[in-house]
Amino acid sequence: MRSFGFARLSLAASVCGLATLPAPLAAQGTAKTNQYGNPATVKPAPTKAAIDVRDLQIRLYQFADDSMLGRQVGRVGNKKGTDMIAAEVKRLGLLPAGDNGTYFQTLPYRLRKFTDNSRMTVDGNPLEWNTDFVAMPGQRAPRSIAGAEVVFGGTQGDSTTQISAADAAGKFVVLRPNPNGARGGPGQAFAVRGGGAPARSRFDDAVAIATIDLDALTPTQRVALNEPLVATSSAPGRAAPTGAARGPVDSIALLKAQLAALQPQSTIRLTRDAAARLFKRRNIDGLSAGVKGGTVTASLDFVELPTEWARNVVAVVPGSDPVLKHQYVAIGAHNDHVGITAPVDKDSIRAFNIEKNKLLLANNMQGLGPEILTTIRVNMDSIRKVHPKARLDSINNGADDDGSGSMGVLEIAEAMMAMPVKPKRSTIFIWHTGEEAGLIGSAFFVRNPTVPIDSVVAQLNVDMIGRGRAEDLPSGGPDYVGVVGSFFDSKDLGETVKAVNTKQAKPLTLDYKFDEPIAWSGYNNIYGRSDHFNYAQQGVPIAFFFTGLHGDYHQRSDEPEFIDYPHYAKIANYIKDLVVDVGNGPRPRLNGTKPAKPRVIVP
Image 1 (cartoon, one colour):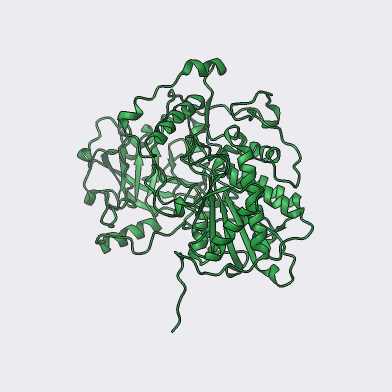
Image 2: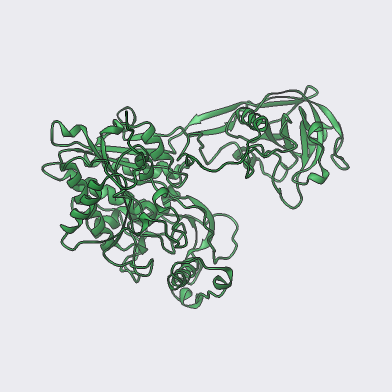
């Protein structure tokens, strides 16, 4: 589930560099189990048609393994995760429903970089790429640099030492790095003030900003500046709510910002020696703001390379009815998580967050202030008896968020493929990417559907169904599941959600509290924070299944060994039965209580 950026406290020592990745999952092994009855690792093995604890473990321990690198959209880990899902649906025999007969719908993410064909001269004398200068890639090719006069602009981030906007306009501005670290660089043209007008920087009209800070990097590190690890996209995610309050907009400033976004200024890093040559000096000592230098001309070779690092996986189980098979029940989860962050001792951070969650529960899930958080004490002695050395971890594996949904949906696909008679309607399985980045995968799909969007009779969204214990949230337990929005667009779908549950051997406890705003810490706008929202905006009836947040949410400790697998299996089996029922029953009508897309009444 997408986070809204709530603060998270980490109880961990400061460590330099990333934690070393462990051996592949199949090579690890221990027979010991934790307090939930789960082992630290589970080896890959064949799965079967029945949805059960063992199969869910086999799948989730692979999908939420460190080798997936946190599955973040725009990074290679997302390709690894989507490769795994696509290989499985192909093996199971589902039909591809992505682009060009494949299982993938690839989003327009690009790797943007400058090549070593980039050139720059000062007064006709060449500077050498990577040796003297490096240009930093952005979203677009930068504006041209042709005969631009060099001027020393002062110290980065320190406006008291800098030249004026008029003196920077049209110039190649050179800055000394801030000795205390940058406090906001020169390129702030795309920031927005509260009133809605673009924020301005005194260097907005410079043709380039060059900072003298390249000497600290090794040759390998300089090359790496243009070997991006993250692909980016300008494709929109969920749109801002219509009617949102906005202040007055400075139309001239807005136009200038839009033009700057289309052709931004170059951002360059220089060595001290190269900077001295720009000013025709032996060194840069004693440079003062406003000092003029030579004339710079540059040809920076900017390229955009397509990437497979942002993909929806789309597959279909065809329906059995010759007419209704052209309609679809959509079931989805999000294949991405939040990737790699700073390394921490995951045992200590988990222990801290367990204590924090206990206090939240005791405080009616109201936010905890610093005066309470600072009282939390963790017994590290007991942790060190089990793990004598700190287990540093930098990878957010997202076992529950949303490994549980993704693998639950995959298990449902396997179960349905084994049915001798399939549901009358087709079932379209969509593992969306980029939910954590703003619901971008589902937004892309509904704008570019691979089946007609009006043929989708309902969308069932599965996001975080692996926890929901009493220790995680109020009313949690072995039969708990939250249901969100099932009555909003279609009363028919809401009633079907309830009816199918009553047919279970032991019905689940369906919790509808998240249909309304709730004051619990971290739970604001649950309805708008996952992929079903984009389908609802298109007038597709939705139901969202969710077992709640917990202390491991968006932490390095969201690991497969902490999932409640018997509970998880119950929910997955129930959702499978719901998919089948919707696939065979009457089409849910748009007769709900809070439709996201009101029906258009034609006079």
